[in-house]
Image (cartoon, rainbow, N blue to C red; front, side, top):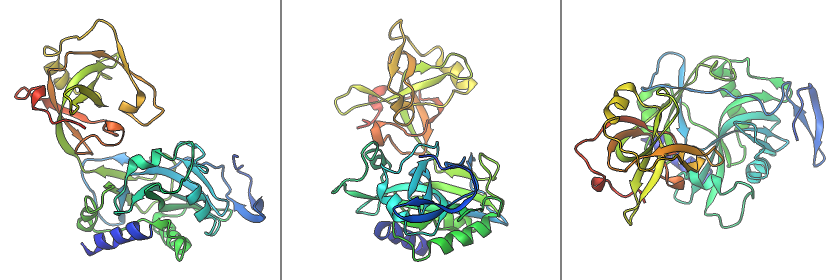
Length: 349
């Protein structure tokens, strides 16, 4: 728990396309020359494969998985991009400016919004979209850095994780409080203590001592702590059996049903169990904003409405819908709860 306390204190209190030409210290910004790495930016990032249990072992490092926005930062030049390559420099100008105090490097990490209480609030990050920092926001943004892709004009991705980790700590030593390295341990019990000790630590990432490879080639694994709850079935989406999923709903405080998420595709046994229970509510399709099934900006979700009278048990990485009134990651439907009615459901908001 001492490690958790230190982790909490750290985050609560301290918390134009660049070409791929190798041009050492040749790009200028505000009169300062900075190095350009020998690969194009924004770069393709390493991704995790989801697993259902924590795996330790020799040569495996465990990091907390913070609930934030994945990004890459070109320090020195003060540029920030999302995982998908969207330019976030204006929206997170405070992080861009803070990174100017670091040596020339490319960092991989997670943008997190920290409340005065030290809790992390994912939904606050969206308030930056299209406008950037404002005074009296009620939160501060930090970068939880977990890897280094380049230093100066040298590509560090071919180096192994442990060597990159040492270099990351060296780069951030005495760096700005808004940009800090994530903690790392090789002990599974210590890592599990982080989950739940801080609001915003939603799971763990397990990393072998391998080079950094875009996509899933780095061998990174991701585990999230899951919670089960119940929801009403509001509709069915998907054109084929393999893609069919449920529109999930919960009653509002006034009793009216509100869509709170789109499930993962249904298992065959669950589909067969649901088929005789669902009754169409109308003869035409309906549409929900893409936010219900993903992040803002996602495509709308078309579905066939059903009468909201069937309750299912779902598994998600949240105990209840939060930001935007929905489950951010799609829940998995476990089974039909024939012993419950929609009147038994607790309001979602």
